[in-house]
Image 1 (cartoon, rainbow, N blue to C red):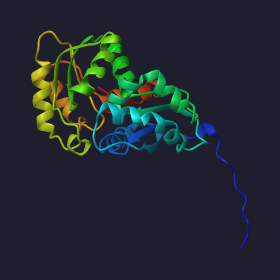
Image 2 (cartoon, rainbow, N blue to C red; image 1 turned 90 degrees about the vertical axis):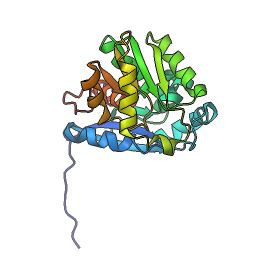
Image 3 (tube, rainbow, N blue to C red; image 1 turned 60 degrees about the vertical axis):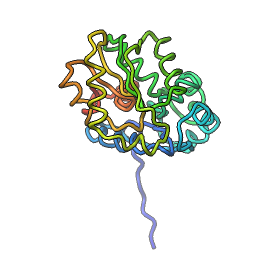
Length: 243
């Protein structure tokens, strides 16, 4: 056996590092992000966080204690340009600043975002203030989300829900159901866009279908999160997930 010399790549040759914390019960966010990153010069590192099979205020708040441990499982060497915490409703209950502080306490993240913060940023960037909201949540989960959006200057007076608490069922809501409900909401003359909330809701291929029918901007928890993370990371090349 012989020992061979080697050289180390400079950090400047490495792709931009993005981190993503995904709920254990989430079956949608990670594959949609991998599809979106096919045309983006970035490396995605994923950590999972314990989460309950049912979405309730109590189960969402319970994740607070696990966020640092999940962020700590991301690799230590990369300089993460942005890290996303993948839960819209938990971000509304905990607060985006709280989530960011917990993530930064355990990993090397320049910026931290979440679907709520990202949705607000997307709405403001595109001058959207009167959104139609479609969610899968129960009333106890919808209320804090709508309140958080209102506090950020985004109204959701036009609103509908699938009222489903089980994550496994949310991940299996048919695209046709999403498209029909969103088009119905988005056709209201008083709204200037549609927000599809929940990272477990499959929206990647539904978004362009809805937009083509209603002629208004449509975005989801996942598309907004991807848009905001790549924006925070100063990536110039964005995939088709960005709307």
